[in-house]
Image 1 (cartoon, rainbow, N blue to C red):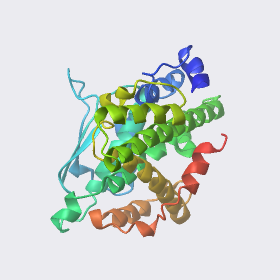
Image 2 (cartoon, rainbow, N blue to C red):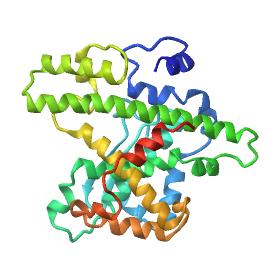
Image 3 (cartoon, rainbow, N blue to C red):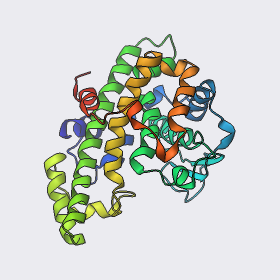
Image 4 (cartoon, rainbow, N blue to C red):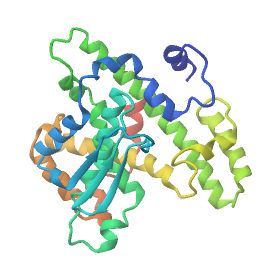
Length: 298
């Protein structure tokens, strides 16, 4: 954390340099390589090629005053009315965020309209986030990144390598940051903690997992982290399953599975049952693949 902060910010990290801050700043010196890329065009191109029905998905990119700053997807009427709200932040993160939310939309628009209500709308968070993280993974895939950059770019290998390195840092930061919050939430429920007690636990866990001290009350400020619901660990479970789904798709359709039209049909069949999804098709909830992926040197 200290090394990255000195490299990216030219100073020691502060307690407010959290995951949400770094996800923009960490790519700053590489942004010019993506400034001419329209993330909406790119993700729509891929999903259309894989035969997903984009007519069901509405995307709001207007930069209005006071517009909600984080990307978010609304399942208004599954599967026929899915809406994505997005406000641009920075070129490379915009690419990631756009793919993430379209992963949600791809999922919701693929659910069978004839499913029972609860299998359409009562989707566990740990399932809902699988497909958003899965599609976002494309923006971290070296083969896909190369396809976005000009073929005559002389330093392409250096760019791809540096992006991979910074993505590994962000994945490790994600795991550490979300693990600390998840463990605090478990104590919050199991031990019936007060807010002050939860703050003390959070401060100690961030120190243990992330490596620097912050005021424990800081967890109350985040847009999803302060909620008493167990949303945060759902991201960790989904990240593991998304990595397994990626391997499953590679085994069936090759390393560039998104360039195979039939891959979309296969994904649609997996997502069609909604909450009644058969996760065993692609997942054993084995974290080995994911942890190896984010800890091995570039």
